[in-house]
Image (cartoon, rainbow, N blue to C red; front, side, top):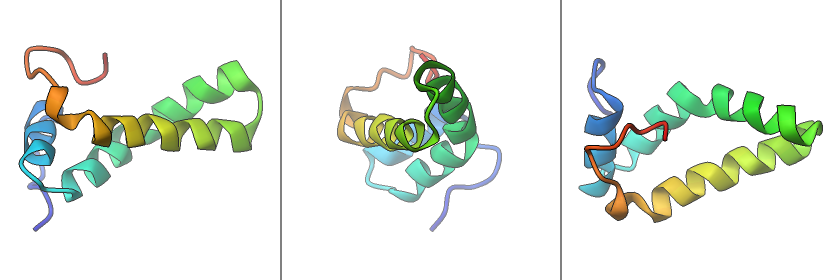
Length: 75
């Protein structure tokens, strides 16, 4: 079941920790463009920036269990 609208980033990370992979999709939808913009600003190459976005969200997924709800997700 997809995450309910109105969930915070912290809620989504906790859902992801609990095995709800659709929470990652919502986080990517919310933050993917921002990550893309930052990556492109530094790399000046669209393909490399897209690779970086994929790497960022892969790391979010792989390190989901180390996420501390006290920290802001975007940090």
